[in-house]
Length: 95
Image 1 (cartoon, one colour):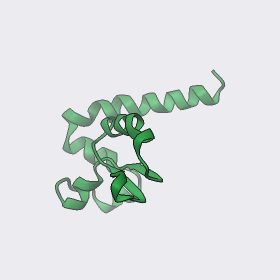
Image 2: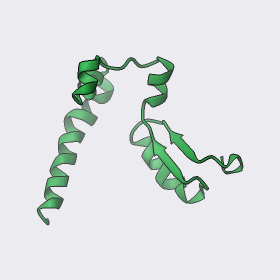
Image 3: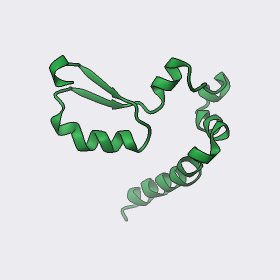
Image 4: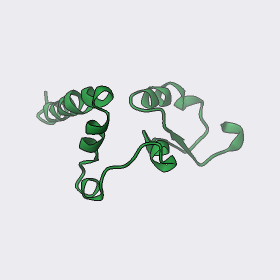
């Protein structure tokens, strides 16, 4: 990748694999911007359908994705998201 001298590297391996990969290899990459894009490539290729426009416009695509693949995504959205919000609130209160 460094030989190609890209300005942006899009990493779409799925969460949390892509974030772990970026953390492990960022110091080796001579790229100004490294961006974890999740399912972007699946959406662009038409492999994974996007939610209805009204869901996209209202920040509810996660609900559409959860409904379409509950076995894979339930822990991320039902457990992970509330846990993240609680951790942010805990940190903001100074604990």
